[in-house]
Length: 204
Ligand SMILES: NC(=O)c1ccc[n+]([C@@H]2O[C@H](COP(=O)([O-])OP(=O)(O)OC[C@H]3O[C@@H](n4cnc5c(N)ncnc54)[C@H](OP(=O)(O)O)[C@@H]3O)[C@@H](O)[C@H]2O)c1
Image 1 (cartoon, helix red, strand yellow):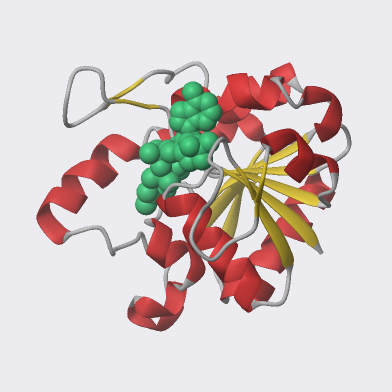
Image 2 (cartoon, rainbow, N blue to C red):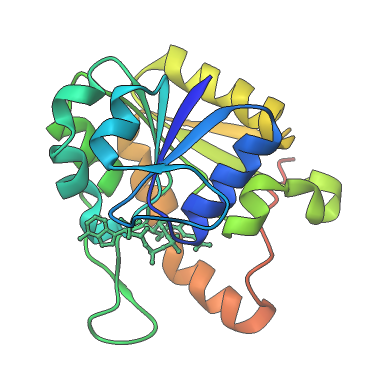
């Protein structure tokens, strides 16, 4: 499978290395001319050739960057791992969109032909590709999206690629508000625990 990862930060590099380990043909779509040990291309070239696109850029840049690629995203699964963090007032950041909207929804509205699946945004970049680091992998990830087939495919791939066993389908893309609005708690937990932790949902 050809995968384009947009963004060369912690998330982009962690995911790209993870996909490469699983034998996929990965390219990072970036404004940079090189990223150590990984193939790079401009975002449009990376996306044009991809079967699956993963968005791992700063939240504020997500919709704008995707907008410049809109025609190339039609029909493709767009995995959105971003959070709308606004650091302009310092740390901890605030959410630039919340309550009645989310980045996931903005993307789906702007690009109705793309099949947006929000996921991975609730865990640190290292845990994303190695859930077994924590509690033998006995903890939870979430998916949100309007296209049931795209969500099922992404759930399968998360299991195949990285070993995610517990993935909860929260519902349509409006449910991305829930995972994005978890970030203020995630950030406070990070201050207490460090970044390698996750949620385990326990139901009676
Ligand atoms: N770090 C984590 O553990 C973690 C965990 C879960 C979710 N997330 C979310 O995942 C996303 C990426 O996080 P990160 O920590 O890897 O890095 P980040 O510092 O939040 O974002 C860096 C990336 O954003 C891109 N970017 C920034 N401004 C841009 C602009 N104006 N136009 C186009 N691209 C722009 C850069 O792309 P170039 O490559 O072109 O420079 C760079 O790769 C964020 O939304 C973050 O909230 C992060």
